Image 1 (tube, rainbow, N blue to C red):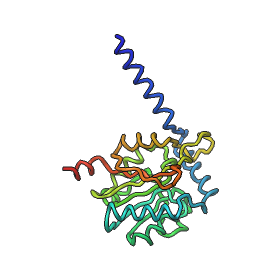
Image 2 (cartoon, one colour; image 1 turned 120 degrees about the vertical axis):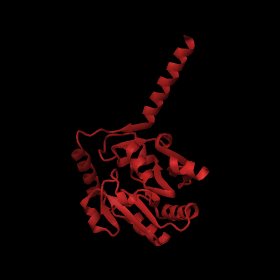
Image 3 (cartoon, one colour; image 1 turned 135 degrees about the horizontal axis):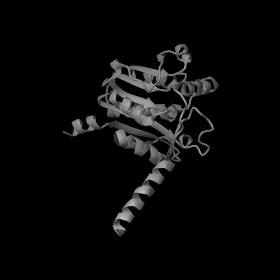
Image 4 (cartoon, rainbow, N blue to C red; image 1 turned 180 degrees about the vertical axis):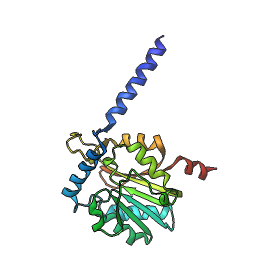
Amino acid sequence: MLNQLQSLWRTWRRGREHAAEIRRLKFASYDDYVAAQLKTNAAKRDRVWVRGDELQQLAKLIAELTPGPRFGLCHGVRNGAEVRTLRELLHCEIWGTEISPSAAEFPFVIQWDFHKLKPEWLGRADFIYSNSLDHSYDPTACLAGWLSCLSSRGRCYVHWSQEHDHTDFGKNGSDCFQATRNGYVQLIESVGRLEEVIETDPDGQRCLFVCRSKAATVSAAA
């Protein structure tokens, strides 16, 4: 009996810890979600979150892990800065997605909800990059979808910073998924395989999670 109670306590405590590390904002409708994203996009359209040195580091990493990449995707790119830079550095076909109609104003960017998949993407992308998973209303399904688009040698690079773990969660409706670094690890391992974590900031405030689909990892090990 005591062992059963201890087991129940541990399960309850793990659930509480998990809840504290991953927070999601629910919307009354999909239209409300889109409206929140468009509002933030309009306010921050000219802002570039990722730094130039981080894109240099990312391009080098992609070239090392997937030599000669042919096709890549960047999700939630706003003005497409990372798409243009990575195209210059990697010399391959790369497209970005942005839910706002403003996507049409930028080269190599399409208006698209990154939760949705284009059939021609499935199993084709040698890499996928995003620093916008915090804008997902369903991060588990979203990340699983991205992983399904990877080629057999592809990797998904998810950029995290302490900004993705706001203490005032819910104040900005567009940032509808908030998580600690460990929360991101839990999410990734629930749908794929975390390969490594790359620090992109000397103070440990920002990092890249490098992940693959479970199927690809098993296939590579076989």
